[in-house]
Image (cartoon, rainbow, N blue to C red; front, top):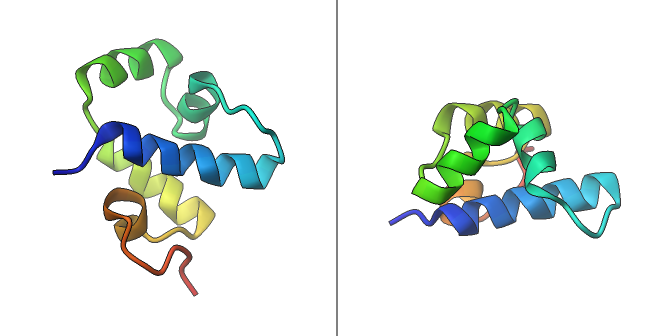
Length: 78
């Protein structure tokens, strides 16, 4: 089963390396996924994975959707 917190940790890792910030807040993740921060708080509490925003995030950052959701290699698309 796909774990919400693991997926969001991988998103947090990507944002951290791209912005050179140590601390990535939930608000930063919500902004990067084009979600309202309050809505992100709701889906975080429910552990509901936002597949469509994640697909756009992967496309924009050239990240493999398999890596983001399932931790399958390779991480980046070539």
